[in-house]
Image (cartoon, helix red, strand yellow):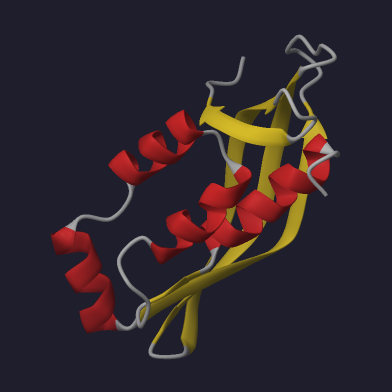
Length: 129
């Protein structure tokens, strides 16, 4: 899987997107970290839940999951043998107490970098266009 930047990126997004109020704070980010560079993990954790947002999610019993996960090379961004820019999208379904209340589109663009041992890892989010 780590030999394919698209496979790594879609696996990362599936983990990043799945949340459950019964899990520890930012459990989704910790699961997704295996597919990321250390600096991307730090950036995502900095932007993740804090005690207030986590407590609110628990009180409301919020959960989410994604399907229709797609990663495609950005047609505008430069691509090279050791660097790819992928546009990510997914359909996220948000639930409270097990009842779906919202469906939304998740979109992001991420750098994906080839590591010295041939493993692709997802890097920080980048601004599109």
